[in-house]
Amino acid sequence: MATLAEDIADKLADLNYGTVGTDIWLGSLPEKPHVVIGVNETGGMAPEFGFSSPGLKYETPNLQIVVRGERGDYAGPRARIEAIYLALAEIQGETVGGTYYHMVKPSQTPFELTRDDDARIVFAFNALCKRTVA
Image (tube, rainbow, N blue to C red; front, side, top):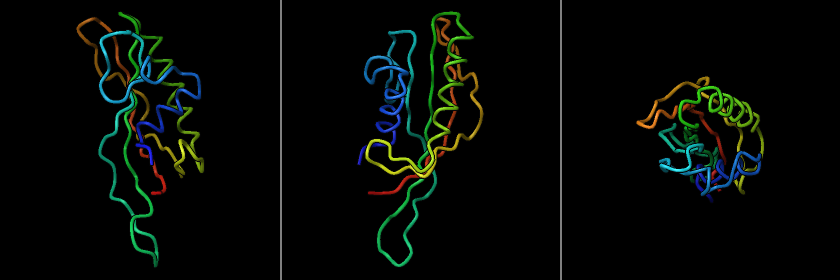
């Protein structure tokens, strides 16, 4: 089973938001290029057991998506994070990267996370993801 970050990064690539390893990154963002998407796994909720069957059946990890833009650009990364926020919220009852996702539920609307030393604005949102354990 692929990781949550790998599944969602591949989904973003399938939706034409970029290419994994070029402008979509797992974990921390590289210094270049300026315009990038980061997919980070963060703490989620406890996994669930199935009824009358041993072992874990469902997990609910948390995801953080970040989008960074060009120096001084507010509107570009803000529009991009909004589009990604809406696109990922449409994942309901869908297989992504070989894993069945019951839902991707944003925890809040996109927000400005930081401005780095190069005056690049970073926007983010978090989402809870319910998926079946393979």
